[in-house]
Image (spheres, rainbow, N blue to C red):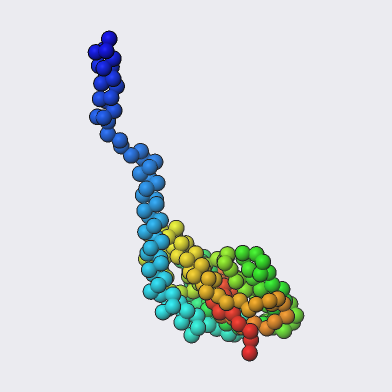
Length: 214
């Protein structure tokens, strides 16, 4: 009886020890996706370490068009203004993105939301005509698309290119200094980038610098 029991145990154990565990297709796919994501993050971080301070911020600082001048140029013809002073994003029908600077009086501000913003009157008519995005949640890809050295063809696909835009926005808003207290009624000077597909689009500026106007 004992011999039969021992034999049964051996038969039960031997097949298990001889088995080879093969990763499932799902596990392999997940592992590959995780590796791709980690690789994207590392490449994008290295790219920004190389270009953000050395290229992107100087581009906005040196080439920012005064808001009244850009507004007049866009009104006269968006494509002409874009060709002369902006950069077009990737893909057919992509928006023109412009480096811009200006100042105005804050009509309204929301600093409680994660998508902080300030609405400015820049032409003195008492109405808000520009919205400044202060983050950390940023709508759009203006800061990526304003720079010709961020070329879609240098990236694996649209997903990786979108990660670049998010990383730029995150780095920008993390460094942005917003004046303390209620902004309403204050006059602020700013620089950043704005994107437009049509001359009638609202002016939504992703801000790089923000300070009280002199």
